[in-house]
Amino acid sequence: MGRALIIGCGGVASVAIHKCCENSEVFEEICIASRTKSKCDALKEKLQGSTKTVITTAQIDADDVEALTALIKEYKPGVVLNLALPYQDLHIMDACLAAGVSYVDTANYEPEDTAHFEYSWQWAYREKFEKAGITAVLGSGFDPGVTGVFSAYAMKHEFDEINYIDILDCNAGDHGYPFATNFNPEINIREVTANGSYWEDGKWIETEPMEIKRVYNFPEIGEKDMYLLHHEEIESLALNIKGIKRIRFFMTFGESYLNHLYCLQDVGMTSIEPIMFEGKEIVPLQFLKAVLPDPASLGPRTKGKTNIGCIFRGKKDGKDKNYYLYNVCDHQECYREVGSQAVAYTTGVPAMIGAMMVLTGKWTAPGVHNIEEFDPDPFMEALNKFGLPWKESFHPDLVDSCE
Ligand SMILES: NC(=O)c1ccc[n+]([C@@H]2O[C@H](COP(=O)([O-])OP(=O)(O)OC[C@H]3O[C@@H](n4cnc5c(N)ncnc54)[C@H](OP(=O)(O)O)[C@@H]3O)[C@@H](O)[C@H]2O)c1
Image (tube, rainbow, N blue to C red; front, side, top):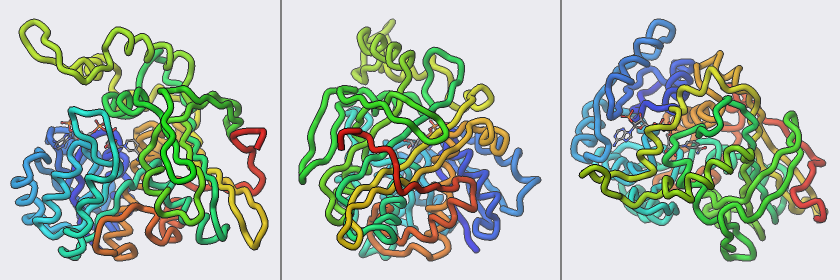
Protein backbone atom coordinates (compact mmCIF):
# COMPACT_ATOMS: atom_id res chain seq x y z
CA MET A 1 0.00 0.00 0.00
CA GLY A 2 2.70 2.54 0.81
CA ARG A 3 6.14 3.77 1.64
CA ALA A 4 7.41 5.41 4.84
CA LEU A 5 10.60 7.29 5.63
CA ILE A 6 11.59 6.70 9.27
CA ILE A 7 14.06 9.14 10.81
CA GLY A 8 16.13 7.92 13.77
CA CYS A 9 17.29 4.40 14.60
CA GLY A 10 17.32 4.32 18.40
CA GLY A 11 15.26 2.41 20.97
CA VAL A 12 11.80 3.60 19.88
CA ALA A 13 12.57 3.48 16.15
CA SER A 14 13.81 -0.09 16.42
CA VAL A 15 10.41 -1.25 17.76
CA ALA A 16 8.44 0.84 15.23
CA ILE A 17 10.54 -0.62 12.40
CA HIS A 18 9.98 -4.20 13.64
CA LYS A 19 6.25 -3.44 13.68
CA CYS A 20 6.26 -1.90 10.17
CA CYS A 21 7.92 -5.09 8.96
CA GLU A 22 5.20 -7.16 10.68
CA ASN A 23 2.65 -5.02 8.80
CA SER A 24 4.07 -5.27 5.27
CA GLU A 25 0.66 -4.98 3.61
CA VAL A 26 0.65 -1.34 4.71
CA PHE A 27 4.40 -0.70 4.87
CA GLU A 28 5.48 -2.20 1.54
CA GLU A 29 8.67 -0.16 1.61
CA ILE A 30 10.51 1.68 4.36
CA CYS A 31 13.67 3.75 4.41
CA ILE A 32 15.49 3.97 7.75
CA ALA A 33 17.46 7.23 7.78
CA SER A 34 19.51 8.33 10.74
CA ARG A 35 22.67 10.10 11.82
CA THR A 36 24.62 6.85 12.29
CA LYS A 37 23.93 4.76 9.16
CA SER A 38 25.62 1.63 10.52
CA LYS A 39 22.76 1.24 13.07
CA CYS A 40 20.20 1.42 10.19
CA ASP A 41 22.17 -1.15 8.18
CA ALA A 42 22.41 -3.52 11.16
CA LEU A 43 18.64 -3.39 11.71
CA LYS A 44 17.98 -3.89 8.00
CA GLU A 45 20.29 -6.92 8.05
CA LYS A 46 18.43 -8.36 11.04
CA LEU A 47 14.94 -7.91 9.58
CA GLN A 48 15.08 -8.24 5.83
CA GLY A 49 15.05 -12.05 5.66
CA SER A 50 11.84 -12.32 7.65
CA THR A 51 9.61 -9.62 6.13
CA LYS A 52 8.07 -8.70 2.79
CA THR A 53 8.74 -5.01 3.53
CA VAL A 54 11.51 -3.72 1.28
CA ILE A 55 14.03 -1.93 3.51
CA THR A 56 16.55 0.68 2.41
CA THR A 57 18.78 2.88 4.56
CA ALA A 58 20.28 6.36 4.36
CA GLN A 59 22.61 8.59 6.33
CA ILE A 60 21.00 11.89 7.29
CA ASP A 61 21.50 14.74 9.69
CA ALA A 62 17.87 15.76 10.17
CA ASP A 63 18.97 19.25 11.21
CA ASP A 64 20.18 19.79 7.64
CA VAL A 65 16.80 20.76 6.15
CA GLU A 66 18.13 20.98 2.60
CA ALA A 67 19.64 17.50 2.65
CA LEU A 68 16.55 16.04 4.31
CA THR A 69 14.23 17.70 1.78
CA ALA A 70 16.33 16.19 -1.01
CA LEU A 71 16.11 12.73 0.60
CA ILE A 72 12.31 12.99 0.99
CA LYS A 73 11.89 14.17 -2.62
CA GLU A 74 14.07 11.34 -3.89
CA TYR A 75 12.42 8.56 -1.81
CA LYS A 76 8.85 9.93 -2.24
CA PRO A 77 7.31 8.44 0.93
CA GLY A 78 3.61 8.67 1.81
CA VAL A 79 4.60 9.71 5.32
CA VAL A 80 7.68 10.76 7.31
CA LEU A 81 7.84 9.22 10.80
CA ASN A 82 10.09 11.28 13.07
CA LEU A 83 11.72 9.06 15.72
CA ALA A 84 14.83 11.19 16.23
CA LEU A 85 14.92 13.56 19.22
CA PRO A 86 12.51 16.43 20.03
CA TYR A 87 15.23 18.92 18.98
CA GLN A 88 14.75 17.84 15.35
CA ASP A 89 10.95 18.30 15.14
CA LEU A 90 10.86 21.73 13.49
CA HIS A 91 13.60 20.93 10.98
CA ILE A 92 11.82 17.74 9.94
CA MET A 93 8.50 19.62 9.66
CA ASP A 94 10.26 22.23 7.48
CA ALA A 95 11.56 19.47 5.19
CA CYS A 96 8.11 17.82 5.01
CA LEU A 97 6.61 21.17 3.98
CA ALA A 98 9.27 21.71 1.31
CA ALA A 99 8.70 18.19 -0.07
CA GLY A 100 4.89 18.15 0.39
CA VAL A 101 4.78 14.98 2.56
CA SER A 102 2.76 14.29 5.74
CA TYR A 103 4.45 14.07 9.14
CA VAL A 104 4.09 12.01 12.37
CA ASP A 105 6.11 12.31 15.61
CA THR A 106 6.06 11.13 19.25
CA ALA A 107 7.35 14.10 21.27
CA ASN A 108 6.88 17.84 21.06
CA TYR A 109 9.60 20.27 20.07
CA GLU A 110 12.12 21.26 22.70
CA PRO A 111 15.00 23.68 22.05
CA GLU A 112 18.30 21.98 22.85
CA ASP A 113 19.58 24.83 25.05
CA THR A 114 16.38 25.29 27.16
CA ALA A 115 14.70 22.49 29.12
CA HIS A 116 11.22 23.60 28.15
CA PHE A 117 8.70 21.90 25.92
CA GLU A 118 5.35 23.14 24.66
CA TYR A 119 3.27 22.83 21.50
CA SER A 120 3.27 26.51 20.47
CA TRP A 121 6.27 26.06 18.15
CA GLN A 122 4.64 23.21 16.25
CA TRP A 123 1.12 24.69 16.33
CA ALA A 124 2.60 27.74 14.59
CA TYR A 125 2.93 25.49 11.48
CA ARG A 126 -0.85 24.90 11.23
CA GLU A 127 -1.55 27.33 8.37
CA LYS A 128 1.51 26.26 6.38
CA PHE A 129 0.50 22.57 6.59
CA GLU A 130 -3.12 23.41 5.67
CA LYS A 131 -2.00 25.41 2.63
CA ALA A 132 0.36 22.61 1.56
CA GLY A 133 -2.51 20.09 1.89
CA ILE A 134 -0.47 17.82 4.18
CA THR A 135 -1.21 16.36 7.61
CA ALA A 136 0.94 16.50 10.74
CA VAL A 137 0.00 14.13 13.59
CA LEU A 138 1.71 15.25 16.79
CA GLY A 139 2.51 12.89 19.65
CA SER A 140 1.92 9.34 18.41
CA GLY A 141 3.72 7.45 21.20
CA PHE A 142 2.07 6.19 24.38
CA ASP A 143 2.11 9.32 26.49
CA PRO A 144 1.56 11.49 24.54
CA GLY A 145 -0.18 9.28 22.01
CA VAL A 146 -2.32 6.44 23.24
CA THR A 147 -3.38 8.64 26.20
CA GLY A 148 -4.90 11.10 23.67
CA VAL A 149 -6.52 8.27 21.69
CA PHE A 150 -7.95 6.85 24.96
CA SER A 151 -9.35 10.32 25.75
CA ALA A 152 -10.95 10.66 22.31
CA TYR A 153 -12.39 7.13 22.65
CA ALA A 154 -13.82 7.85 26.12
CA MET A 155 -15.34 11.08 24.82
CA LYS A 156 -16.84 9.36 21.77
CA HIS A 157 -18.24 6.22 23.43
CA GLU A 158 -18.48 6.61 27.20
CA PHE A 159 -19.22 10.23 28.19
CA ASP A 160 -21.31 13.29 27.36
CA GLU A 161 -18.67 15.36 29.12
CA ILE A 162 -15.33 14.51 30.76
CA ASN A 163 -14.49 16.70 33.76
CA TYR A 164 -11.34 15.07 35.19
CA ILE A 165 -8.52 13.08 33.62
CA ASP A 166 -5.68 11.50 35.58
CA ILE A 167 -3.00 9.99 33.35
CA LEU A 168 -1.04 7.31 35.22
CA ASP A 169 2.27 5.99 33.91
CA CYS A 170 3.65 3.09 35.92
CA ASN A 171 6.86 1.29 35.07
CA ALA A 172 7.33 -1.55 37.54
CA GLY A 173 10.24 -3.00 35.55
CA ASP A 174 13.46 -3.86 37.37
CA HIS A 175 16.69 -3.75 35.31
CA GLY A 176 18.97 -4.47 38.28
CA TYR A 177 20.99 -1.22 37.95
CA PRO A 178 20.83 1.30 40.83
CA PHE A 179 20.19 4.05 38.24
CA ALA A 180 19.35 3.95 34.52
CA THR A 181 16.69 5.54 32.31
CA ASN A 182 14.35 3.60 30.05
CA PHE A 183 14.59 5.97 27.12
CA ASN A 184 17.09 8.59 26.00
CA PRO A 185 18.66 9.66 29.35
CA GLU A 186 19.07 13.29 28.33
CA ILE A 187 15.40 13.72 27.34
CA ASN A 188 14.19 11.66 30.32
CA ILE A 189 16.18 13.59 32.94
CA ARG A 190 15.21 16.97 31.46
CA GLU A 191 11.56 15.89 31.78
CA VAL A 192 11.66 14.65 35.37
CA THR A 193 13.80 17.43 36.84
CA ALA A 194 11.51 20.18 35.49
CA ASN A 195 8.82 21.77 37.67
CA GLY A 196 5.57 19.83 37.78
CA SER A 197 2.27 21.33 36.64
CA TYR A 198 -1.35 20.46 36.04
CA TRP A 199 -4.34 22.10 34.43
CA GLU A 200 -7.26 23.19 36.60
CA ASP A 201 -10.19 25.51 35.93
CA GLY A 202 -8.65 26.97 32.79
CA LYS A 203 -5.14 27.61 34.11
CA TRP A 204 -1.83 25.92 34.86
CA ILE A 205 -0.91 25.25 38.49
CA GLU A 206 2.86 24.90 38.87
CA THR A 207 4.54 22.70 41.52
CA GLU A 208 8.11 22.03 42.59
CA PRO A 209 9.62 18.91 40.95
CA MET A 210 8.18 15.78 42.66
CA GLU A 211 6.21 17.93 45.14
CA ILE A 212 2.94 15.98 44.78
CA LYS A 213 3.11 12.29 45.59
CA ARG A 214 0.34 9.68 45.61
CA VAL A 215 0.27 5.91 46.10
CA TYR A 216 -1.83 3.97 43.60
CA ASN A 217 -2.79 0.32 43.41
CA PHE A 218 -2.14 -0.49 39.74
CA PRO A 219 -4.05 -3.39 38.17
CA GLU A 220 -1.76 -6.42 37.60
CA ILE A 221 1.12 -4.63 39.40
CA GLY A 222 0.12 -3.48 42.90
CA GLU A 223 0.87 -0.39 44.98
CA LYS A 224 3.48 2.09 43.69
CA ASP A 225 4.56 5.62 44.61
CA MET A 226 3.83 8.08 41.83
CA TYR A 227 4.63 11.77 41.39
CA LEU A 228 2.92 14.58 39.52
CA LEU A 229 4.88 15.77 36.46
CA HIS A 230 4.26 18.31 33.74
CA HIS A 231 3.47 16.41 30.56
CA GLU A 232 2.85 17.63 27.05
CA GLU A 233 -0.52 16.03 26.32
CA ILE A 234 -2.13 18.06 29.14
CA GLU A 235 -1.71 21.15 26.96
CA SER A 236 -3.64 19.80 23.97
CA LEU A 237 -6.22 17.76 25.91
CA ALA A 238 -7.13 20.92 27.87
CA LEU A 239 -8.21 22.44 24.54
CA ASN A 240 -9.73 19.39 22.88
CA ILE A 241 -11.78 17.66 25.62
CA LYS A 242 -15.26 19.09 26.16
CA GLY A 243 -16.14 20.08 29.77
CA ILE A 244 -12.65 19.45 31.17
CA LYS A 245 -11.94 20.91 34.62
CA ARG A 246 -8.66 19.26 35.59
CA ILE A 247 -5.94 17.12 33.98
CA ARG A 248 -3.00 15.67 35.91
CA PHE A 249 -0.14 13.36 34.95
CA PHE A 250 1.56 10.99 37.39
CA MET A 251 4.62 8.77 36.86
CA THR A 252 5.98 6.11 39.21
CA PHE A 253 9.57 6.32 40.48
CA GLY A 254 11.36 3.97 42.84
CA GLU A 255 13.35 5.17 45.84
CA SER A 256 16.73 4.24 44.34
CA TYR A 257 16.01 6.18 41.12
CA LEU A 258 14.99 9.30 43.05
CA ASN A 259 17.91 9.16 45.52
CA HIS A 260 20.40 8.93 42.65
CA LEU A 261 18.63 11.66 40.71
CA TYR A 262 18.69 14.09 43.67
CA CYS A 263 22.36 13.36 44.26
CA LEU A 264 23.25 13.90 40.58
CA GLN A 265 21.23 17.12 40.61
CA ASP A 266 22.93 18.34 43.80
CA VAL A 267 26.38 17.94 42.28
CA GLY A 268 25.36 19.64 39.01
CA MET A 269 25.46 16.55 36.75
CA THR A 270 21.95 17.12 35.34
CA SER A 271 22.70 20.70 34.23
CA ILE A 272 22.41 21.64 30.54
CA GLU A 273 24.67 24.70 30.99
CA PRO A 274 27.97 24.06 29.17
CA ILE A 275 31.14 24.00 31.31
CA MET A 276 34.82 23.92 30.39
CA PHE A 277 36.56 20.59 31.09
CA GLU A 278 40.24 20.15 30.24
CA GLY A 279 40.04 22.87 27.60
CA LYS A 280 36.87 21.50 26.00
CA GLU A 281 33.29 22.65 26.43
CA ILE A 282 30.98 19.90 27.68
CA VAL A 283 27.34 19.79 28.82
CA PRO A 284 27.16 17.88 32.16
CA LEU A 285 23.88 16.13 31.26
CA GLN A 286 25.32 14.94 27.92
CA PHE A 287 28.38 13.61 29.73
CA LEU A 288 26.09 11.83 32.21
CA LYS A 289 24.20 10.27 29.28
CA ALA A 290 27.51 8.90 27.99
CA VAL A 291 28.31 7.11 31.27
CA LEU A 292 24.81 5.75 31.98
CA PRO A 293 23.67 2.39 30.57
CA ASP A 294 22.32 2.67 27.03
CA PRO A 295 18.51 2.18 27.29
CA ALA A 296 18.76 -0.26 24.37
CA SER A 297 20.93 -2.53 26.56
CA LEU A 298 18.26 -2.82 29.28
CA GLY A 299 16.02 -5.15 27.24
CA PRO A 300 17.48 -8.51 28.30
CA ARG A 301 17.78 -7.45 31.99
CA THR A 302 14.40 -5.82 32.61
CA LYS A 303 11.72 -7.88 34.33
CA GLY A 304 8.22 -6.80 35.34
CA LYS A 305 5.41 -4.84 33.75
CA THR A 306 4.28 -1.39 32.74
CA ASN A 307 0.74 -0.11 33.19
CA ILE A 308 -0.14 3.17 31.46
CA GLY A 309 -3.64 4.57 31.20
CA CYS A 310 -6.18 7.27 31.98
CA ILE A 311 -8.86 7.53 34.65
CA PHE A 312 -11.78 9.63 33.40
CA ARG A 313 -14.50 11.17 35.53
CA GLY A 314 -17.47 12.93 34.00
CA LYS A 315 -21.13 12.62 33.07
CA LYS A 316 -23.19 10.27 30.94
CA ASP A 317 -26.96 10.68 30.55
CA GLY A 318 -27.00 13.12 33.46
CA LYS A 319 -25.22 10.71 35.87
CA ASP A 320 -21.69 10.80 37.30
CA LYS A 321 -19.42 8.18 35.73
CA ASN A 322 -15.84 6.92 36.31
CA TYR A 323 -13.94 4.98 33.65
CA TYR A 324 -10.36 3.67 33.44
CA LEU A 325 -8.66 2.67 30.18
CA TYR A 326 -5.17 1.17 30.39
CA ASN A 327 -2.63 -1.17 28.87
CA VAL A 328 -0.38 -3.61 30.71
CA CYS A 329 2.83 -4.60 28.96
CA ASP A 330 5.43 -7.17 30.06
CA HIS A 331 9.11 -6.22 29.61
CA GLN A 332 10.28 -9.80 28.97
CA GLU A 333 7.54 -10.53 26.44
CA CYS A 334 8.50 -7.37 24.53
CA TYR A 335 12.13 -8.43 24.60
CA ARG A 336 11.29 -11.90 23.26
CA GLU A 337 9.20 -10.37 20.47
CA VAL A 338 11.32 -7.44 19.24
CA GLY A 339 14.48 -7.37 21.39
CA SER A 340 13.46 -4.22 23.35
CA GLN A 341 12.05 -3.44 26.78
CA ALA A 342 8.45 -2.29 27.29
CA VAL A 343 9.11 1.48 27.40
CA ALA A 344 10.46 1.44 23.84
CA TYR A 345 7.75 -1.06 22.85
CA THR A 346 4.84 1.00 24.21
CA THR A 347 6.14 4.00 22.22
CA GLY A 348 7.23 2.24 19.02
CA VAL A 349 3.96 0.38 18.43
CA PRO A 350 1.75 3.54 18.50
CA ALA A 351 4.34 5.35 16.35
CA MET A 352 3.91 2.67 13.67
CA ILE A 353 0.11 2.87 14.04
CA GLY A 354 0.11 6.68 13.67
CA ALA A 355 2.12 6.36 10.44
CA MET A 356 -0.28 3.61 9.31
CA MET A 357 -3.31 5.89 9.94
CA VAL A 358 -1.82 8.50 7.62
CA LEU A 359 -0.54 6.05 5.00
CA THR A 360 -3.90 4.27 4.71
CA GLY A 361 -5.78 7.60 4.47
CA LYS A 362 -7.80 6.86 7.64
CA TRP A 363 -6.46 10.06 9.18
CA THR A 364 -6.20 12.84 6.64
CA ALA A 365 -6.73 16.42 7.72
CA PRO A 366 -4.45 19.06 6.22
CA GLY A 367 -2.95 21.05 9.07
CA VAL A 368 -1.16 20.28 12.35
CA HIS A 369 -3.18 18.15 14.77
CA ASN A 370 -2.84 16.46 18.12
CA ILE A 371 -3.77 12.83 18.13
CA GLU A 372 -7.06 13.19 20.05
CA GLU A 373 -8.47 15.29 17.18
CA PHE A 374 -8.78 12.16 14.99
CA ASP A 375 -11.27 9.27 15.05
CA PRO A 376 -9.89 6.96 17.78
CA ASP A 377 -11.66 3.77 16.62
CA PRO A 378 -9.23 2.49 13.93
CA PHE A 379 -6.27 3.28 16.21
CA MET A 380 -7.87 1.43 19.15
CA GLU A 381 -8.48 -1.58 16.90
CA ALA A 382 -4.85 -1.51 15.74
CA LEU A 383 -3.56 -1.38 19.35
CA ASN A 384 -5.29 -4.71 20.01
CA LYS A 385 -3.93 -6.19 16.80
CA PHE A 386 -0.30 -5.03 17.11
CA GLY A 387 0.58 -5.93 20.69
CA LEU A 388 -0.86 -3.27 23.02
CA PRO A 389 -4.32 -4.56 23.94
CA TRP A 390 -6.28 -2.20 26.17
CA LYS A 391 -8.43 -3.00 29.17
CA GLU A 392 -11.26 -1.04 30.75
CA SER A 393 -12.70 -0.72 34.24
CA PHE A 394 -15.99 0.95 35.14
CA HIS A 395 -15.25 1.04 38.88
CA PRO A 396 -11.60 2.05 39.17
CA ASP A 397 -9.81 3.12 42.34
CA LEU A 398 -9.44 6.89 42.18
CA VAL A 399 -6.14 8.71 42.71
CA ASP A 400 -7.31 10.76 45.70
CA SER A 401 -9.24 8.35 47.89
CA CYS A 402 -11.16 11.26 49.47
CA GLU A 403 -12.75 12.13 46.10
N1 LIG B 1 5.43 9.68 23.46
C1 LIG B 1 6.05 8.77 24.18
O1 LIG B 1 5.40 7.94 24.83
C2 LIG B 1 7.54 8.66 24.17
C3 LIG B 1 8.18 7.78 25.08
C4 LIG B 1 9.58 7.62 24.99
C5 LIG B 1 10.30 8.34 24.03
N2 LIG B 1 9.64 9.22 23.20
C6 LIG B 1 10.38 9.99 22.16
O2 LIG B 1 10.87 9.08 21.19
C7 LIG B 1 11.98 9.67 20.51
C8 LIG B 1 13.10 8.64 20.37
O3 LIG B 1 13.54 8.23 21.67
P1 LIG B 1 14.63 7.05 21.83
O4 LIG B 1 14.60 6.64 23.26
O5 LIG B 1 14.45 6.07 20.73
O6 LIG B 1 15.97 7.90 21.59
P2 LIG B 1 17.40 7.30 21.12
O7 LIG B 1 17.51 5.86 21.45
O8 LIG B 1 18.41 8.27 21.65
O9 LIG B 1 17.33 7.42 19.52
C9 LIG B 1 17.33 8.64 18.84
C10 LIG B 1 17.76 8.38 17.41
O10 LIG B 1 17.69 9.61 16.70
C11 LIG B 1 18.91 9.78 15.99
N3 LIG B 1 19.22 11.20 15.83
C12 LIG B 1 19.50 12.10 16.80
N4 LIG B 1 19.77 13.30 16.26
C13 LIG B 1 19.64 13.15 14.92
C14 LIG B 1 19.79 14.01 13.81
N5 LIG B 1 20.15 15.29 13.96
N6 LIG B 1 19.58 13.51 12.57
C15 LIG B 1 19.24 12.21 12.39
N7 LIG B 1 19.08 11.34 13.40
C16 LIG B 1 19.29 11.80 14.65
C17 LIG B 1 19.95 9.10 16.85
O11 LIG B 1 21.07 8.83 16.06
P3 LIG B 1 22.48 8.26 16.70
O12 LIG B 1 22.27 6.79 16.72
O13 LIG B 1 23.52 8.74 15.77
O14 LIG B 1 22.59 8.86 18.09
C18 LIG B 1 19.18 7.86 17.30
O15 LIG B 1 19.21 6.86 16.31
C19 LIG B 1 12.37 10.90 21.36
O16 LIG B 1 11.86 12.05 20.72
C20 LIG B 1 11.64 10.68 22.67
O17 LIG B 1 11.32 11.88 23.32
C21 LIG B 1 8.29 9.37 23.23
